[in-house]
Image (spheres, rainbow, N blue to C red):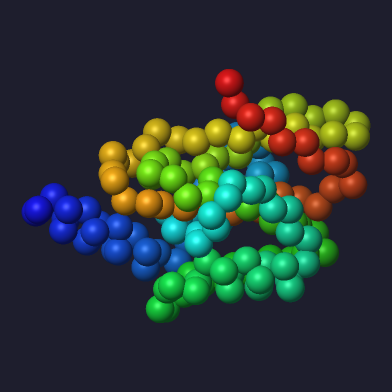
Amino acid sequence: MKYIILFFFIVSCSAQKTSTKASGNKENLTLILSDLHSNIAAPQILVIEEVSSLRTFFATVNKTRKPGLAFPKVDFSKEQIIIYARGENYSTAIPQLRIVDEDSSVVFIECSSQEPLASTEVMASPFAMYRIKKTAKQLQFVKAD
């Protein structure tokens, strides 16, 4: 019982983080936010190029949060946002994206997950939000082996 209470305490503390910053393997793909609860049931990848779509995503994420996650500052004239949501599952592994290859017309982005933070029987819906420079190239997502 102590471990369950301790787990919920740790998870609730991490819900108060405003953002997690890290950089990807390439300079132009940057992690700006990740969390274990997105309120998104099915796995999906969203490419957001306008403020209204980002507001819609944050409305979904912040439905059960008070206070909600902070809205990131993004210049949509120069950047776009990629959100990788893994959907509801029993894993605490945060989704990860990295650019694996790039040519004149396509950017290949690998979708994977980091090692689970803890084993749990609690339903989670982890997501990660990345910033990438706006490009005319097509974004192609590939699953990691």
